[in-house]
Amino acid sequence: MAQIIFVRHGESSANVDKVLAGRTPGVHLSSRGVEQVTALREAISAIAPQRIVRSSVLRCRETAELLFPDRHRAIAIHRAFDEVDYGQWSGRRLADLGRLSAWAELVENPGSVEFPGGESLAEAYARARRGVAELLDGAGEGERIVVVTHGDIVKFALLDALGLGLGGLHRLTVATGTFSLVDYTRPDAPMVCAVSAAGPAQRARGTLGG
Image (cartoon, rainbow, N blue to C red; front, side):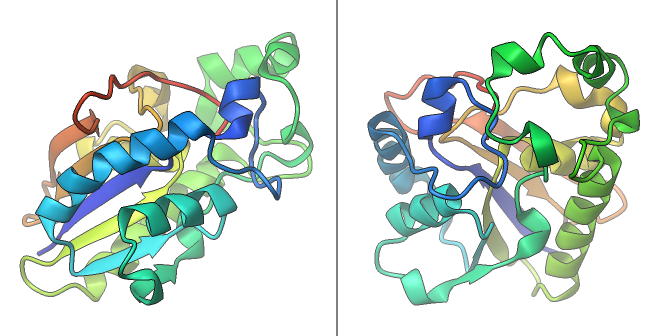
């Protein structure tokens, strides 16, 4: 069975501005985000993935193309790994969202939260699980697959592999411009081999909003 390397996109302009980007169009990588991804390129290249998929969101496209400058045409979009649809929360400052009563519910019981005009975290979690299952279903023995996606989607994959479910959401930090690796050799007992690993000279630092 395969290994999947989940890459969170590099720091974005929304991360810098402390805004919940969601699926808002036109959110690019920041200059630091470009540096993060460039530093990560050597480590990801050493893994030598046979397949590359990404979220349809711009910052993931930019990240994937920086990681694989000679393989643009080989990068496939897989919408199961798109960002959570935060609905009306998208584009709002995190400081303002933190004052909402719904934010406390997000912290205490993330599995019960549905974003107004968007999707629930439970729906996004199930979507990410389906995406992983689809990749594994078509994977060759020992195949290595890179998925360029978003912080919460990476967390969902890790939580599912660890058997923790959404209740463990806030026990994980996945920084921008990092990768996490799950070995699915035993599909009934996947092994988490790396979490939020950064490239050389990069210090992993957790951020929200992307």
